[in-house]
Length: 241
Image (cartoon, rainbow, N blue to C red; front, side, top):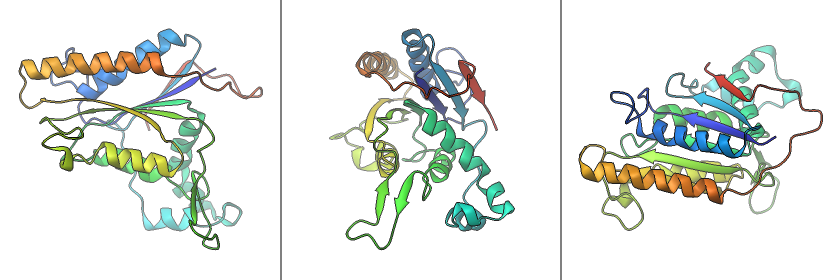
């Protein structure tokens, strides 16, 4: 059974075009999920709303716990890593990750950066061995064939390669770099622009982005089968912690 991890990180609730002041990225991710479910009627969707419930920021105790071998951790260390464990378990279960990540001040929202900090974890999603020659780090998810669909929205325009604002776009680069570090390199991205202008250019950008989302769904390849002993779960699991 294929599994989709659906992540929203916009501080705006609701969907643009349907709700007052609704989110463009939530609109795109909802469109993606709806069509993915039509293609995979028996698939599982895990939902994580980072905008409504941001993950905790990394602390000194978190770092201490993460770099302590699992069999040597004290009870408080397991508590410190509990949320990270849950977020990573969702990621590991997913074949496709669709993430709505709007541009805030030229980069991802703080809540999405907190998510990245929780899932990029030594010994779990990336390896580290200072005795290795050359590169001491290696991605641990590189053989799993996971795919990331990154859906963004920007107030201005010209943030794509070659555009007037391309040098100020730190959303796609930051997200792609972090996910590649743990081994997820199959990434597709779509973005809406002109939000602050709220004119026909915005409407056209939305139509274009929705068309690109539809094309992505056609192009996504098949996904792996679940383990035989995997427990049965609801087709849609909404998680808000």
